[in-house]
Amino acid sequence: MRAKFEALALLAGSGTADFAMRITQVALPLVILRETGSVGATGLVGGAAGLPVLLSPWWARKARQRVDSGPRLALVALVTAMALASVPAAAGLGLLTPELLVLSGLLLGCGTALSDPGRSALLADTGDRWGADRAVLLLTWQDGLRRVGMLIGPTVGALAVSAGFTNRLLWIEAVAVVGAGLLACTVPARRTAGHAVGQGELPSIRGSLKGRPEVRYGWLIRSTGCVTWFAFTLGLSVLGEQRGRPGVYLAAGMTGYGVGSLIGTAISLAVVRRIPPVVCAAVAWSWSGLCWIAMGLCPTPAVVAGAGAFSGVTVVVGITAISVIITRSSSGAERRTLLGGQAVVVSASSSAGLLVGGPIIAAAGAQVTLVGAGTITALIAGLVLLRCQTALHARDRDHHVGRAS
Image 1 (cartoon, rainbow, N blue to C red):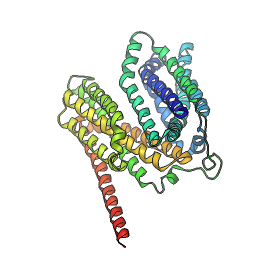
Image 2 (image 1 turned 135 degrees about the vertical axis):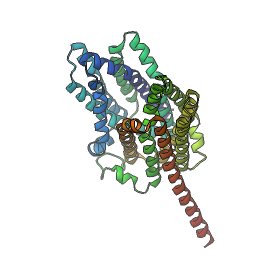
Image 3 (image 1 turned 90 degrees about the vertical axis):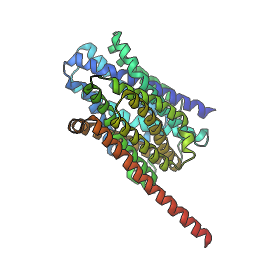
Image 4 (image 1 turned 180 degrees about the vertical axis):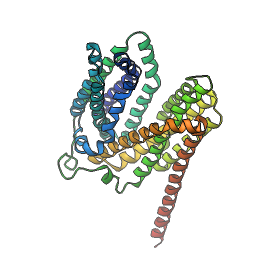
């Protein structure tokens, strides 16, 4: 019962903070634009926040292991809230500058690099105490709450901005992050001798991958999907603009994707339990790639919405499969390291895709880009599936030979 209460506290904090962040994404650029008068400055916080996450394998290797309890997670949340609050506070005083935006982004990125894998690892550890496979169940529902925020948050933010609550939304996010930290304080650390920080060499991401080829395969598939994600978001935006229906295609795709991802959250664990996880991940992203191909070949709002919904289901199933691989094969410090490594993989590959996405769409066109991105995603996932099937057949053959001898 105690583990269940702690899990609910962590989920409630994570869901609340993420929902507030989705709302604030609408307000933050407007506040910066109004105060600085610079369009270029609107991306400074987000851009600066990505740097600490990308560099976290080097600077956060030891710090990541210290975020192993609710109170320590709350301390990181406090620093994050201060970084968030600095923007509306400076705006209210008329002191908002590009330098302060960069500093706020860097602090925010440091907090994200520590809190995201720390909260996920703590949630998984709590699930282990609750029961078998509860760790991946909790991680799946954490991802599901995040997707609810993605689906509803921007709309709520737009309504709040139109009602004149722009600056107040930034304060609300800071308060929500503090609240998430207070909820996390109910979860104590349960360190074992082998997992305590300072005992022995701390695991590196590369070291933790040794003997875990399925994690590497899962990251390869997921990073490919993240790199090509720009074709879905930027591609649909450009497609709508070119067809004289700005926003319609992206809204259809994102709405479908959001609904599908919620369905995926509800069914993913049941699916993964019946299929080898890495095979499940490969099949899931193969289907997601085919969905993007369908959008490019038949770009109507109805097809985009339907393909987006099916893609949302498959991507969530794939993410759950990778979570199963990590939670079943690791614990303690290594699990925290692997979850941190996964965050770096997702962040780095998404950033790389967005960096090259605009020029690719400009050169090839939105429809061709969607088809190409879907083909690459399906091809990489298909190759991983083929490799895994070969390995499974070889393992079964060796097993039968061993029994015969």
